[in-house]
Structures are given as structure tokens and as C-alpha cells.
Image 1: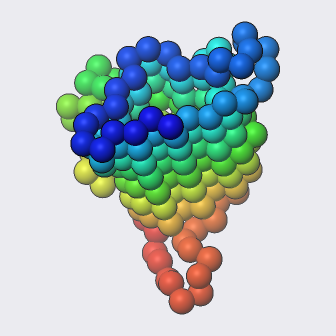
Image 2 (image 1 turned 180 degrees about the vertical axis):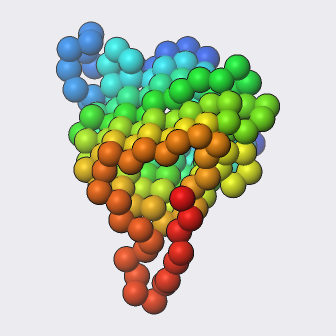
Length: 178
């Protein structure tokens, strides 16, 4: 675990699983806890994917691609990209990717950055995307995707997945806007 009770956690260098040299599935995992902010400014799992990644913070900036073999869970407000504009890819080779906090473009204006989410299992959006600063585009490829939030982009949205809209709780009705 990486923990900061009162400060930020910033990764400016690449993060990989140290268990092998580019030819094995993830053995080690990373959990990041910060009462302030977290930043991933370089790729995670580009050579050796981690088993899983869990992030719990006030806000998290992702300006790089992240690949895990297992799940990725974000209990944080995600800010995608930088002021120059880029496409960030979050990929789970064998498991789920879950977003429990809002997602916004980190560019100086809306539509600067894009997000691609690829999971060999399921994806869940449990909080709004683009409510403050919309992404340029959003692409999702997964077995199934649950959308229990509103999603706003300046450009296209593509879902190569079975979409499940709303929450499975029959006492909770929701209208989702895409």
C-alpha cells in the first residue's frame, strides 16, 4: 500500500510488477490511499501488469495508460489527461474496472482528452462522467457495462459492450442521460 494521511502521492515514473521480466501475469498489486490527491504521470503495467489497482483519494489525475491483469477500482474523482490533450487507456486483461467517483477532462477546456476503457470482464460507471469538464470521447469495450450515472462528452461515445442502465435495486429508479 501507498498511504498519505495529509499529502499527495505522485508517480512520475513507470510502475510495473517486479515478479518477472515481461513474460508473466500480474502477481503483485498496488493500493493507493490519500486524503489529498494522487497522480499517475507515467504508464502503469506497460511491461509487467500488476494484479490489481485500487485507488482511494480526494482526486486522482491519470495522464498515462494503466494495465492490470485483475481489477481496477477507483474510489476517487478522476481527472483524465493534461492540457496538451491525449487518449488515456485503462485496461484490465481478465477482470472488472469500476468507477465509483466522477470522471472529468483535466484539460484547460472541455474536449481536450479522451478515455478508452477495455475490460475482459465488466465495467461500471457509478458516478457522472463529464459533469464539470466533458471528455472529447469515451470508448468502452467489455463483456458488460453498467451505467448508473449521466455521461457527457464533447465528441463521440462508443460502447462495444452489453449495456445495463441504472441500478439493480427495484426501489431505486434512475433516468440515465448519455
